[in-house]
Amino acid sequence: MIRLIHCHQRVNLAKVSHFAGFYLAVAFLLIGCTSTAPSSEISGEIDDVQFLEGNAEIDIPDGVSELHGFVSGLQDVTTYVRFTTHVSSVDTFISSTLCDTSPVLFNVPLASSNLYLPNWWDLHQADNLKSCIGNSDHLHQEVYLSSSDTGEVKVYVIAYTK
Image (cartoon, rainbow, N blue to C red; front, side, top):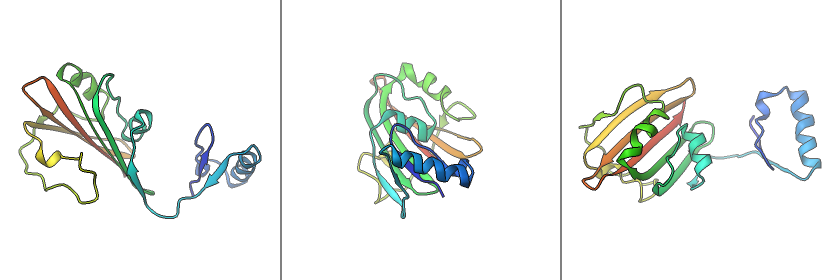
């Protein structure tokens, strides 16, 4: 079982032996850290750039606006990220993703927004949509780009663990 250690860093106790994990947990508790084991699905909005970048395996460009994030799951975690950036930073951003190809025109109609997602997740209303997908051993990633005449691009990322 994975336990989160709330201190200066997170430790995945599943990656160490049970014997070592026990002593590591005791050591953290003795120095004032707390250990929690989530018992149900967790979900919520988050705006921590490093957390979102780590979960979605992306590099969010400097100077973005309207940055939003939402994480849902327990063992299988889904991360939604949306931000607006200038068209000049899109190529660099795409190179930081898992996308196998450059984004291509996306003509498939999208279902209306999920009732469980925040209102800022408005992908179903996006215009001039392009998309690309990519995978790693443990993550599936979908990237959608909605460009405007003003040079701004609204970026949507969905990343979920496999």
